[in-house]
Image (tube, rainbow, N blue to C red; front, top):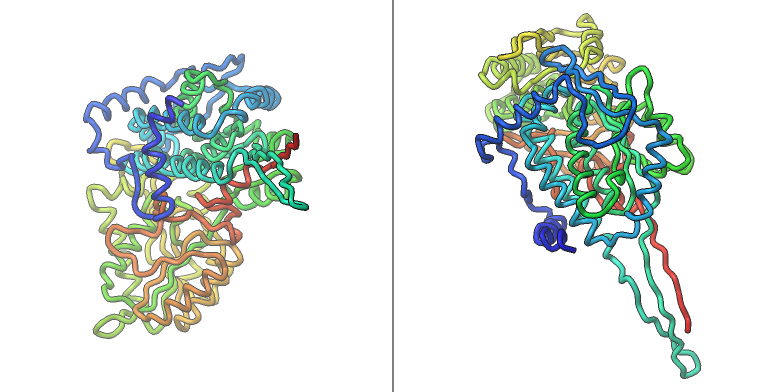
Length: 549
């Protein structure tokens, strides 16, 4: 209970934030608010790991593997990780579970909060590890891999804490029959379901994985994390800290394990199909996600492909609108699951205060905004690198002949990294009849501006794409109250959230822990939401027992 007492104030504040949905964080996402020496020591720590074996996990292994390639350097990091077979991982998890499942929620939450505090001390090292595995720019890598991931982890801990405390541990129950009280002693136990498998992605290895990791651990389940072979280091660093705190607290460090694999010998399917795996968290392509959802006797939490629309009808500030969209699609070269892809604009133009901005004028403004952003000192870091060559080829495979080229994807110079894999945002203007082109996800630096007959047609096409291929976000610009309520109602009925008239420094890509749900779990982009009660409660089962003397 010592660790719980140390962190209980933070946990109770998080519980309050979950109810109020107000801003809450204990992890600043501004690197400048941390000591200057932390940045230097973090870079040194990262550099010292290059071309070495990652021994922090303290795992005995006869085989070490690693195939990460820095998108900035386009060369291997040389870091190797201990390989363990699926059978060994499962055996370790089962052995650890015997103790972890019987630990009360206060002690679990204290251990997990302490782990987050240890991870906080490595935020800068994490940011460099994330940069050189995912291609994110430094600031995004710092925020997403560290503070924002820990925010989501704390959210899962707090929600798990409150859900597991929902019912009393035991009660004395009485029923009166024939003038006599019949007493029954009852107890209520949340029983963890079993081994949890986290299948991580290559673009946001910690941010997308932390909710599932901490949701499973707080509910008493052991965890095996299967990282993408090209993005292992951020998870290796964070898992090593969790393992250290577990061991220091008297628990088996194998309560959480890193299950590394390679492109030539993937383990995800083998692990997922294992009879002892009961929970699966997955972020990635739709095809594999749909396969996971069909597995027998598994509970899955998936985030898959999405087709996020922007519907533009009218605006009070066209410059702010264009600037906001340009930044949203540029952020991390549109490799975010929440980034817009399809921008719907009526052929009659966008209503503004003094008339209309034509379709062609909007396209020109968007191109200029994208160019201006890239020309700024911080522009290249905003786009970052493209994580892998497959994404580049996918975007290059979209023929510019099917529409009007607004901007082509071109390499740009990255300060300090001459060999970085970069691409500017490819923008193609197409007519609404070209649905075979834009009504599918093209992951990466690719945007379609779609000319429609009217705003009503824009809504119809955007909703059709979102219902067919899934959507995590929808962005709308409109000054019409009744139109906005109609869009909100129609998209919400399809379980798709809507953001209206975003300008300034609030972007549709970004979801805030404790306030914004990430995904709804109700459309084909995924069956789970970060972090709602279903994300927690499916990981255990309530069982009640009765005793009579």
